[in-house]
Image 1: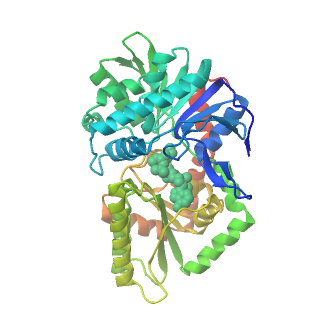
Image 2: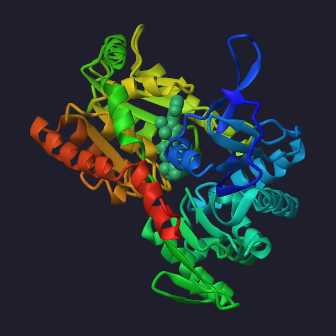
Image 3: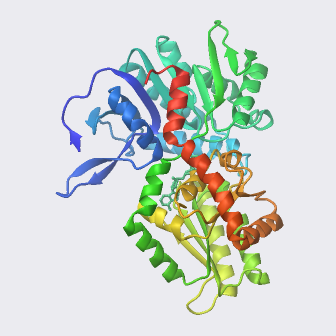
Length: 469
Ligand code: ADQ
């Protein structure tokens, strides 16, 4: 419900993210309208946004369109315009074809283009200006993610009165990789403009601090860094999480239970393995599918009894590397099913589509083994969502050591996704583990996910940043 009421000219709490917290829909009367985005970040920040009369600065999703700020469901939305060319250069280029692969172990080749960088600087400047305009004197600003790494320093220069937080949702690479970036100094200075720089895991914070010391020459000590003007900032780990209770409630909804049963009936298998990922080369899909192909071929998994359901959400479809990945995956799946299937039965059930949250909860409920094997992942929320949906206390999680979540979900079957044999073994072990073993592990996993949910994440970060509740 968008209201025509004027937005507040000033906000005490401002979130800056690449995307606004709303998406455009067509309402029942066929009119264009806004709907709050379903993501966890929005859910987590909503209560604080409302109590602080907060503002959210972000792109609204349509290129070449300038919109006035508006009020939606208790939050002031401040849309930042992007031209079609900026979407290509800042978003698809610098953000998703340079920084994304570089920060994920260079598992795909990062491309460096000077025009992309220029667009990145210009767009970061626009976001910083928009936030500087709307933040009230002494307010708190929280900048999100790798698309906006220059914003903290740009804001600090304009508005030294603000408290500035930054959170990186993806890994922060070690020096050996980060050094490739032609604009490494600028990015480090940009981040170091924040009072608190948050990472998913302690390793990311350590990589950052080491670079700030070695590349910028800042003094660093026990999580603190000192800028040339003598002011200080801090870096630390704040592992993000999910709305655990919300997922559990959704999974226990009678409609979800019925839908999960329907999925089981349709799959008609004794054991269901599930993968759910954005179709992204960091998610280890090639290796995972190869492992299942070998297990079905060797008979370690019986195609008559076991099924592997892989849900791949369409993602970044205009970026070249993602088109290639989709072709590769579909070739692999088609080949395995062609060799190992029969009429009416395919060992791999592959779906290229996004689903509502309730369908996701039904899928998690329906799966005996959840297989999460990214080559590198900041956190990985799918692993936590699966755990939250297993109120029955059974189910098994196979999880890559290279997901941030592995630090917390230690009772999963942990694997190195590059080690195909090791991964095959873990998949078989998880699938055939005694019920008591699965139950013991799931109990520990659930304890972690329920004591460390998304509210815990946001509260901890904002408290450390100095925002009074
Ligand atoms: P992502 O790389 O997108 O996030 P992930 O953490 O797994 O990865 O989050 C994916 C989200 O999308 C989950 O909430 C999941 O339920 C949802 N999703 C996936 N497939 C879907 C489908 N087919 N239909 C509907 N929903 C689907 C980035 C980082 C991660 C980090 C998060 C949060 O790469 O490492 O955990 O941000 O910080």
